[in-house]
Length: 129
Image (cartoon, rainbow, N blue to C red; front, side, top):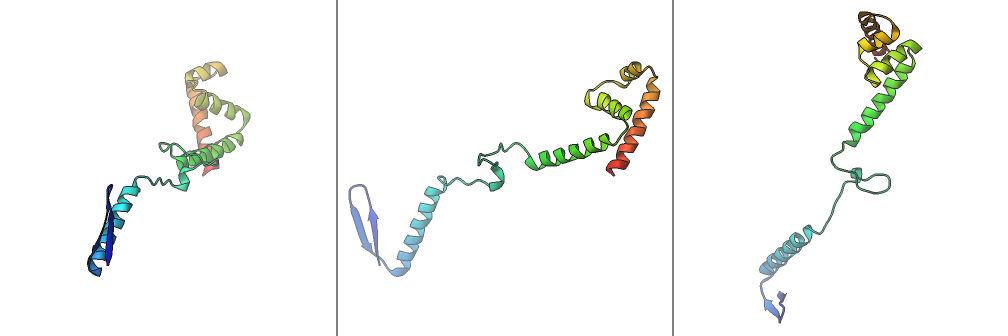
């Protein structure tokens, strides 16, 4: 078997046995693959958004979807509460109003609002359960 090597200034062709020729061809193929390995760019199809753009890798898309789904369930559950209960949940949990301040707004005591809040949370657990 003849093996051809091309250099910058000349080309050399040598005669080798078939075994050695196969080994040299295999080594050349490995060198070629190693040289071209870095030029290949692979990305998971899961990392692409609808428009084919890469999504930022530091975001967990699955967790974001699950959190969105859970938030929808929670909002549907809150919608099943009475209007006064919805107002309390909105003020304390979404607007960050302290229980004492909410009690002053309503003209009741803080323990009263705390008990009401606990009952509402139990109701939400039943609805979500």
